[in-house]
Length: 307
Image (cartoon, rainbow, N blue to C red):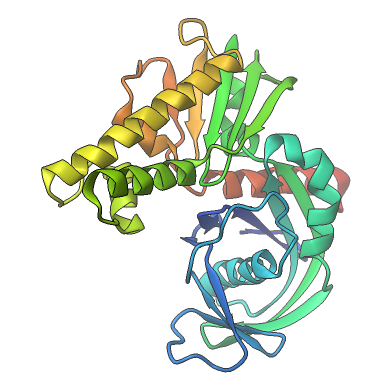
């Protein structure tokens, strides 16, 4: 969250697995109820409906504007940032992102979707909020997460932003992004989760909870029997090999390029791939994209006075 003279810039990374702001991260799940649910720990109330934030799993959709979920999740993200400063009324500029090759085609519809109500009243964590949405700026995913590192990107570099739903690829040559190298593939970490589920069932005739799979992805291990752990690790290793195969198809050469890995999938590369630490740089901050959106919006606001 960046405070300007009269407005507040809030960066939000609308992930398929997690929603990220500059200071917070929560699951992208949302469940809607017509009446007040029994458990209300992360309840948001908007438009006479009750939403439990972080419940369930948001499946991959190419168009994030097709339902109300991401709008409600956006309200929750705004509230989490304002809550830190005890602010309940604000004039907000949203700084958000879309997959690289989708940015130009979906920017207008996504901005319109997020700003469909100029003012909105809702409650979250039993706190009432009155928000004015004065503008929405949409930036390319992947690039925003490494924007602060671009000044050091001499020669040829590749960005791999590995999220839950997509992987975004971009080359930066001598500090300049090369538009024609942009690519978005539906090959996020959720694809690896699905592969683990299928292989685990095939080998063991049992199902496995996604939280265990996620723990292995993040830490490289978990407190489970060796045979079960072996299944997850083998599938994860194959998935990472496929990541690098796809990167090579988009021009990656580990001998001549530096690779910048951002997004939640970076932990898979760390744990299940033998890489050259001098040529592979990880952006470990899960909130890096949201922070990058805020920085880009602040620069634009300062240059143009208004967004």
